Image (cartoon, rainbow, N blue to C red; front, side, top):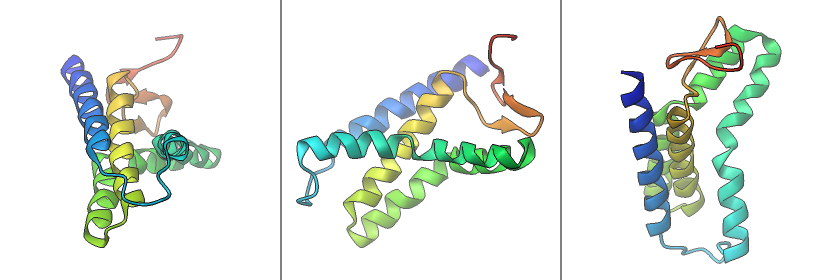
Length: 127
């Protein structure tokens, strides 16, 4: 079961990156250099939720999981489509790609027991 979830994550990540490559750069903001930096920054936005672990594993897991659900990326994607905001569209696609990539490498949704406990199993040196 876990292997299939990891494969699913990899497929979703690849599909999201393919979708991103198909998006037309309609804003002057999207120069090739700036686009690359924007992609790198937006890809790691969901990991900013790790800051919540300062408040303990329960709070950290809540915010981490909130930012690492596929709908958290789909929402800005559709808002961007509706309002014609390419940055929101790109942010949504990159969030979905991020979540898929993390699931592919075994970083699943976190448990309130601790950061190393996920729905895909425990990870780290002592697993």
